[in-house]
Length: 241
Ligand SMILES: C[S@@+](CC[C@H](N)C(=O)[O-])C[C@H]1O[C@@H](n2cnc3c(N)ncnc32)[C@H](O)[C@@H]1O
Image (cartoon, rainbow, N blue to C red):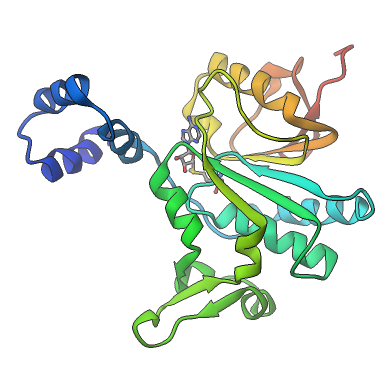
């Protein structure tokens, strides 16, 4: 996999060996370090992936309807389908295109963040969505844009896309967050690294906030940091745990 992905960078740069590529990276890496990172990430995602999370988020937002502006964070947002699904959920929960919600969408890969910022997707990406949601939140392209759809500009207004590496030593984010979606990214890290990330992430949760995790991620090994509170959902562990 690494071979295939980096080979593309070598071809783009006209280099003939991995040694030449690594020598060039180490000598004058610059922007190529970001291209190297972007080439290595796996960005599989979809709108409303793991739909039960969005049902739960809907309930949590409605329960806090009078709590003032709420903050949500998608910390491995990939091409944007996850934060846009959160934005749609907020609009649906409050029955308005301007819900009292701000969404932070971060990822280590700058290319996927650019796709998220554009908010334009092939129509197949929304094929399985409910017809009402498609009508309310997506604009179908015509002419040269045929085959693509654009998210409603009101959704784009709710989201800030920013680069952030979960491996960095601290996260400069403005919480506390009612919901942190950290889904299908921890699988790439070993347990000590997962613990280190959770230790940095969890303090940004609101007291009653929840961590939404991927279907194949479990944190039994981190029960002193977070505790399960539903299907692939966690809350901050209480001090006594
Ligand atoms: C498989 S996608 C998951 C996207 C979305 N969360 C979902 O569940 O549909 C994993 C994302 O994690 C990002 N990622 C990988 N390592 C990361 C890191 N160290 N910091 C932040 N994001 C990272 C990748 O760039 C990729 O977009």
